[in-house]
Image 1 (cartoon, rainbow, N blue to C red):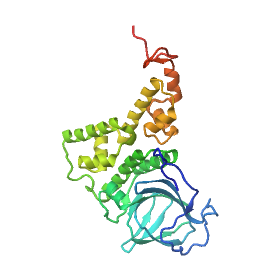
Image 2 (spheres, helix red, strand yellow):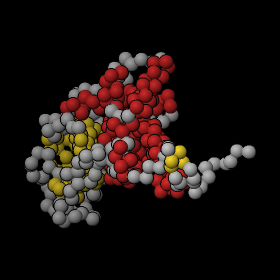
Image 3 (cartoon, helix red, strand yellow):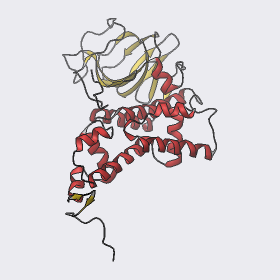
Length: 329
């Protein structure tokens, strides 16, 4: 299983293993008939993309033939987001078609039947949440069991998260990204859950933004969105949404801009140990630092080193191989 390393990175873990929630054998399934099915893993398999602080993000791949059905019972909360394919979710209250335009939250101890009317292969992201994580991201441990309509905007957040988890992100970034994604879906399922009774004045919102910027500037490596929101008396989703509305950027992007600026400053001062710098600034690894820097300035650390290369004596650079900007007259 994937886990966070000592410096807080997220990595891919073991090969796919069988996806099983209730231990019950499926009915109506004899062999995987979908095109491209892996005969070594018939049925449903999963790979763990991330696991930390009561949260596990799994990629579940299904290869059932038409007519397969099985019973499932979650032991904890979950969020299901279909990326490809479809299935039917049957509960005592309703029979619901689940596809990439819908999402829903799983409830612990709630039994349901999942059926596959077609043999098309499917891929679903399932985020499993402990009780504490559910409160952190959803504001409570109760949510209406409803089908949540989603569009390309949510799927883009979803796809970005999966891609970055594969590449590697740090713990605070995972927390912020899940806050945005889960919070958006919670507000659609239960409007006002995370935003009602919050200070609505521009001055109050500006103060929230300034306090968030202050916390990030003080310690960009270990910024804790949940702890800061709790100190400010609001939900992480509300803080994240206000920050985006007031600044035009997300907390994650702002934090990465601060860290990219720190990298530039340190490299300009002669610090060339990029791996150590990545760990000090809370990046998942060297590659994560390089990606963030490229997004910020279009250059990797190697280009910065060439730009600022020269001797540093008593904290002052005495020569450079390349001028910076235009010379003043």
